[in-house]
Length: 141
Image 1: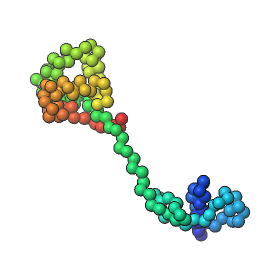
Image 2: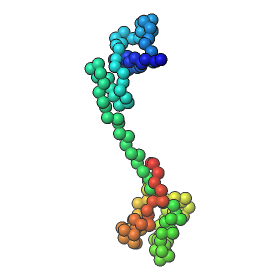
Image 3: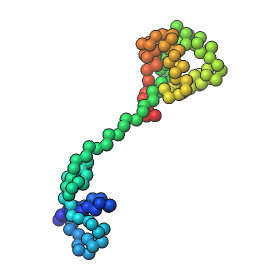
């Protein structure tokens, strides 16, 4: 049958044994090691010979990127809306037209996302632009 025992050293920290260590083993512990009460559970830190609860760190949520698949963009538009977007895109430089024409997705962290938002908002208004540009999926940045 195991009987756990706790020990603490200011430089090493806290550890537990599954049985009472022999004198010879305890002689190997760093000088200043003291017997310590067993740790109640995670999120407790040693303090003044006992334990103090410490709130676990809150992991920040990862920044998310909106991804819009071209098929969804074009499916969401009516034929007249698509024609209007096409007319505006014809006025863009060749590089920009090629990026939009060959993209496998449109991402909110891409340099041309603001242009896509601007075109949709100017042509259809903010509410309709939001519907058309709604993400197909959200992924961590």
